[in-house]
Length: 258
Image (cartoon, rainbow, N blue to C red; front, side):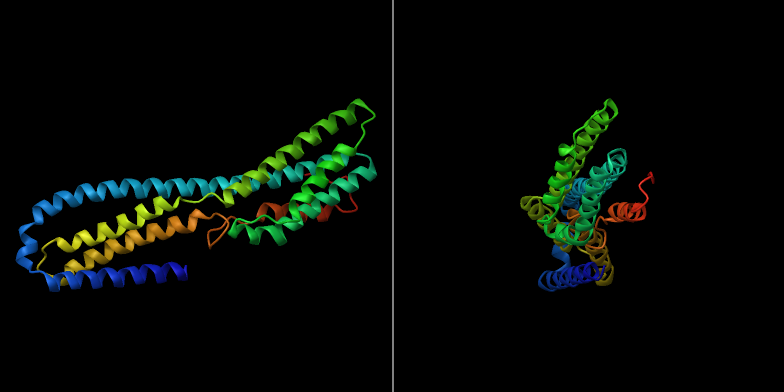
């Protein structure tokens, strides 16, 4: 939030300085002569930029929400594997559930802070593989155990898929070329307003400030949402923390169910 205020304030100062410089270097009569033509061109320019800006904002917001859904899905699949293990023999159940708890703990304590840089925890994938191996090593002896075995492997695969998607979400960003278009478009849109001939400097300044605040706020929002695991609006590991609370509460009481 503080960074956003600083960025918007700096952009406003630069925009106002540019306006005052243009008004000093050009005459009011010269700017008034081209108001009609400038207004027509500016309308087309503003519409084109607004479409691009709105599209990118909606896209990054949807991607941010998709990352939240993916993280919740991963935690849900982990909980499903944990509770499914209650149907296994004691030794297999303890091994599966212990590794599920360890995975949740590593994701919360280690990996989540690394996601803001797009990095996975070097401890998480081995735990995932160990969890899968625990189920693969189980040898079912009854039809019911065979069903649990097949269901368990399927759920671990779903868990691994959700994890891969979460890691991809952490590395999926707005392309650099699109950032160039957004920033250049914002500068041009604001700068173009300098060419209008308004007699009252304060009115002109207020208009420029309002436009600059709006555009800079939207651009900063896009920047913030572009990384769903960083910033004030980051996706939190709440679902994994809830899982871990349930897991810890079930220790020594394996009859607990979700």
